[in-house]
Length: 141
Image 1 (cartoon, rainbow, N blue to C red):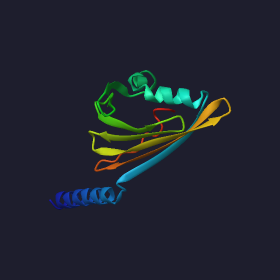
Image 2: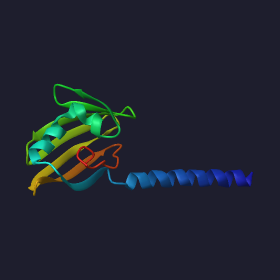
Image 3: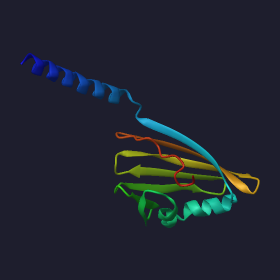
Image 4: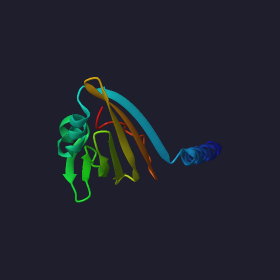
């Protein structure tokens, strides 16, 4: 009986510890990535803007649906992520996103000509009740 009581106490203490650690984690995540792509900025932006074709070159995308405000990506896991383009130019692409998994954020790519290619620097900031590790640069890397 004594073993059972101590086992329950240890289990409760473990549960409280997990909750405290989770509560202390930051509510927002930020990730960065950079790559040089062998194409001019206009071609890179054209690929990013052609959202319907993302499933052809991005892993984990099951479908893309256009909406009045932008588009929705449906992942292979069934998660729906709504995107709105705030800026779609040859020097910068800025997106807002919100997931039905409980997080939202912003994605920004700065495009700089480099030789015959383009240096793409991506920053993604995500937060929310269920913030996840940002999958940085998935659309261009």
